Amino acid sequence: MNRIFILIVLIISTINLNAQEIKKDSIIEPFKIEERTLSGLDIPKQKLKDHPNRDYFQKRIYKGSELSIYILSSETAVNEINSFPIDEFVFFMNGRADIQTAENNEFSFYSGDYIFVPKGFSGNWTNNGGNKYHLELSVISNKRADSSSTQKAQEPFLLDRELISGIGLTELTTKKFRNSLYSGVELEVLTESEEPCEKNIVNNGKEEFIHVLNGIVVIKPFNGKEQTFYKGDFFILPKGFTGSWKSEGQNLFRTLKVIQK
Image (cartoon, rainbow, N blue to C red; front, top):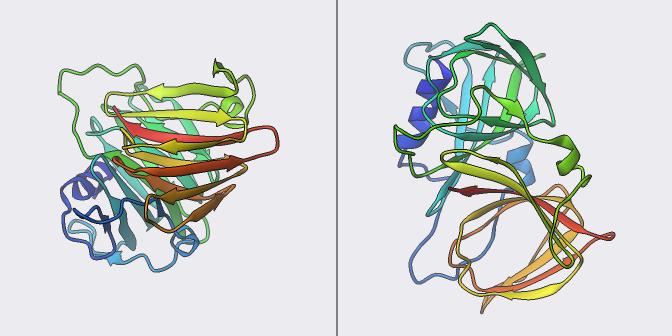
């Protein structure tokens, strides 16, 4: 069983009682990824057809109109990849990923790394769980890019640590900053920063996976319940959201976002 098969399973999977689905006529509100899930707990064990004795865990946390979010964990195993079928954003949370590309380049990713895996990558990917299991958070698009789409990146890479750390930000407008970390054929990853502010959001145009890098934000849907998100939190701001947004931060409120292209 390789990483391609696992991700194809993620793409076509439609039944998961743990998934968050957007329902018609309901209040559209942010969806928080709970700390217990991010800690690697309560992830259902799955049986891999080709490797029934391999420990593998998977949970679809969220399926929206544009994005799907998964948490994955497995014992140490080598995955042979021949033309990775999707764009994938990965936040690596435990263990180490060892990569050997088709050109025999070798490098590793570690816990805390923000990774982009481009559609079309070929090589070997080893999830090294160390003591037992690796753990990663995965974001993919629900829409597949045309097969003729070309990709700038040919192998997985670390997203810019300087920009994620708030260094060298590009001022988009007064008191607002935006930098694209990578624009693939299915996903775009960016950082957005702002001086603390209050604003109203009307019919949010894109579904956004958001990781709070610095500060806090209080979000209240129209006729809904207020939620507060702090540094380190992960949440989804769904497409179509309408409500208020109040950010606070030491100089800047900063986020990392993943959106569908």
